[in-house]
Length: 213
Length: 220
Image 1 (cartoon, one colour):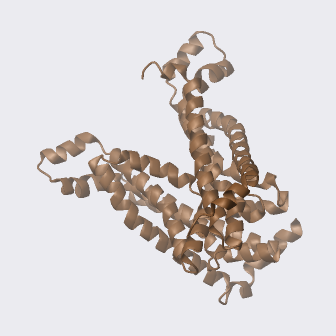
Image 2 (cartoon, chains in turn yellow, blue; image 1 turned 90 degrees about the horizontal axis):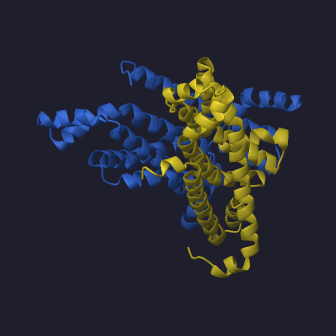
Image 3 (tube, helix red, strand yellow; image 1 turned 60 degrees about the vertical axis):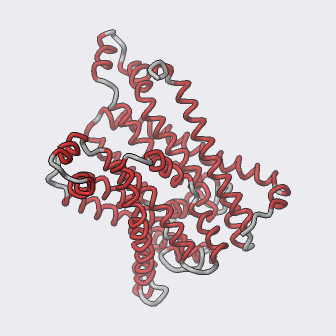
């Protein structure tokens, strides 16, 4: 199996478009995943009986195969980018929800009591005390969800989307390995770069963690 | 929409759909066969590796990075790549499924081993137990719940992903998904998807129930 370098140099525009579209699908999914799981995690953290229910539900959603989720969405949203993003979002929920709940759990009770004693209102405590302290655990979840989404986007190639995944179908149909190799390498690269960027973002967002190191 | 679900219902429940070589029963058996064999191969690779890394404490870097590499590797791309390299055989299917399962097994086995209380290991050594005795009689039993979680996660992921066998012209429940997509037969596609999802969810519930039963006397 050899790489046809001239194919790569002749398709740089296509590759750029596919990479951008791939990343866009993954990041949109993580964004909506956070948008949904943050409030749910706060509820799960505060209301004990709902906790098992919400975490269990997200676990069950996670066991549904990604191809099945995409296909099951077809009658609702058809062969569109929306289907891809909804499917990926469902997958991010289990990681994001679990990590956010664990992150909120990890905030010391004394810190919360101190905030209360200082007269900080509950919402303000949540936004300025609890969430920032939970950030490292939440960010660990965001990193996993992002890497996972980037890898899963290619499954959506079966429903006509899939970003870099289209290179896999293309190479498969033409019995031509170069696009497939390029697709795998670019997906791995995207994952590595996105993960490194998230580490950098976390470093910037948690200045109090740095002094210890 | 209603019509679609009605058709899906009759597709799933008709006797003719369940029998024959393209019947649900046969496809289900194929699907389970691929999944179980792939998970067994992955166990043979992942368990010794995870135990070794956990016992010696060497290669922890590998164990952690293997997990993120496994998450990042696109299975669809891998199966096509191995298919183009090896031709029409079950190899691409098993390579991709094993590659998917090994990281989950290694990292959970490793996590289970590192969670064993160091005092307990010291006590075992202090009683004169040898390295392999500590590993098999102390660390392994204590790490077992997490190891089983890893195996369960791996199996569920493999079951979910074994649909790709049909993409490279083999059987399993993915057959319905890909044939249906090619024939623009949405009922068949949905039927396949529902079956795969049901198998994954049922297996997950059954195995986590088994786990709870086996380790019911443990507090942690």
